Image 1 (cartoon, rainbow, N blue to C red):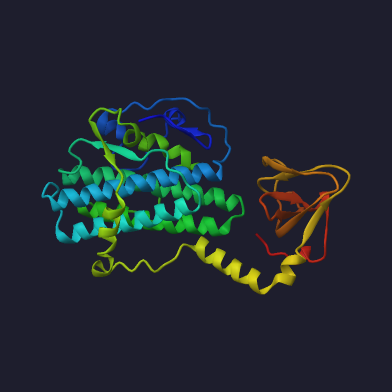
Image 2 (cartoon, one colour):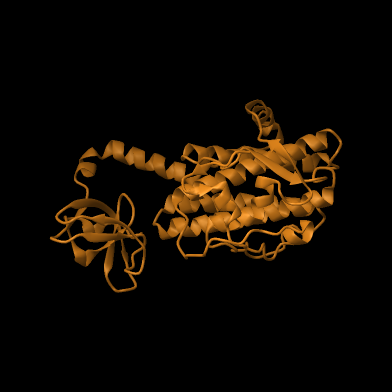
Length: 341
């Protein structure tokens, strides 16, 4: 496959991600396949940017749909010995992963690859399939928890809730594949928070993306539109309603409705204005947080929320993203009534 560069994260960058252990899963990649991950980029302590989160999540979801479709086909062909109930698990898991992928793409995500590699024999050995799928789903859960942390810090509650919703479904998949492997499905009180950033999950998924690890075969193409439609057509019969919406979509719909009915209020939004000096707009309400933008001298910006910082100052949330400290700007009427964020 040709290496591509998208939004600052290339295939080569992925191979250079620092080694992150899978932690408390049943098996590690290195113990299964003797995989040696490549050490490189320094851990800077900075958060993944939103586009990187979207792109990596879409890559993981596309892999998941490819993985579950292969399991469905292998079971149907008689290669993978799953019973009818377990086959239905695969079909509904496929639908939910496809829903996740479609949502991410609608938000501007671009998967880093469009075909994948798998361990030889994965779809003919139930025990191996169960163990590998558990590792993958555990990784997905942890990655979405990392995304939830980042979106929370950014004050993006709608997206934080949505990534938490997805993490919940991935944990259901993890439980089901443990059951398929005859292991206790519900073996924990809390899901494991292993990664600070979504990109920290890349080394775990690396063999599926490049196929260079011993024992991996492929590539396997992602599902086609016809294959997706065929499984979606079974949703009703399977009892899969899919009627729960991602919170981000609900929040956007509510915001759109509010805007349509309150034009006057929208026109008179609350603003903050800088004085004779530029004002830093920071990622979080703290002077130690990264500067993400600058409000130039004698200019204004819309603010839509507030938070009391650990320094004892009120910080205003900038509608376009970031935070400014209240003592560095002047505000129009209504600032004190803005919601806590």
